[in-house]
Amino acid sequence: PVGPAVTLVYAEVNPLEGTIVGQTATAFKDKVEELSGGSITIDIQANGVLGAESDVLDTMLGGGGTIDMARISAFALTSYGGEKSSLLSVPFTFVNRDHFWNFATSDLAQEFLLEPHENGSGIRGLFYGEEGFRHFFTVKPVSGMEDLAGMKIRVSNDPIMTGMVEALGANPTVVAMGELYSALQTGVVDAAEQPIANYQANAFPEVANNLILDGHTLGAIQAVITDNAWGKLTENQQAAIMEAGADTQAFNADLSETAENKVLDELKSSGCNVVDVPDKAPWQEACQKVISENTSDQAELYQQLLDMKA
Image 1 (cartoon, rainbow, N blue to C red):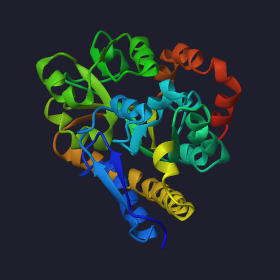
Image 2 (image 1 turned 90 degrees about the vertical axis):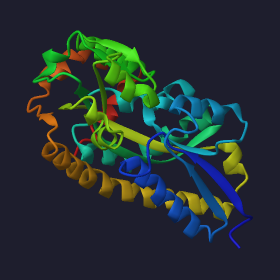
Image 3 (image 1 turned 135 degrees about the horizontal axis):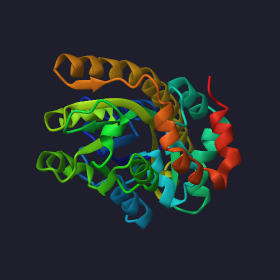
């Protein structure tokens, strides 16, 4: 036998249906259960029922054992012993998906994944994925970057995104993901940013039907597990999880682009005002200060990332 029966609770803040992260979670669950000979059960708790990403990480690091695994945005690790991961959310780092996947399949990616564990935080990264490029969407129609000036734009508790919003002349406003729909509806915020699939799956076009495709960051994601849960697994079970992770990473790479293009077509045909950004140079220039402030202490490492473009 592969090992004793064990159930691992896996937290996901988005819906399972219609999101890239949701489908990635389901693929991982199926593969782990298959490769572990049924000895491991992954119990996915989706739709943010276990809290926002920061709540989930607090619970995992608190060691209460109620959450074993989670899918999180790479930048969420910045305050949890994952300083290297902060580089992944610096705007305009990845020029395209191939650039990101060159990183995600490299030895450097493994270093990033294990950094929190090595810093004694009590969690380790298992694999990478992405949920597409993140774009701004707004309640009022926009035609370009200058239209964002003065808007109240929703941010999660992320210093880099806060800095970017300020660089665009807008006002960053922290709102939890679960409250974002009503915040847009009631005018608490004028805009937000998400990958396209999350934008659609959370019904945001109903309240903010303008999407500007600036692609400021690629939504790099990773799955993490607590050292505590990892330690309870046999070597064979750990191997099954790692193999399932590699498999899921490849599944995500195939899925993301296809899913995103399909959603974009659906949005356009349902009357969403989709604004293309043929030239990102002005956006990059506006964000230059944010980029240098958030990379200067890891300049050499950041250069390595930039040099991985295809």
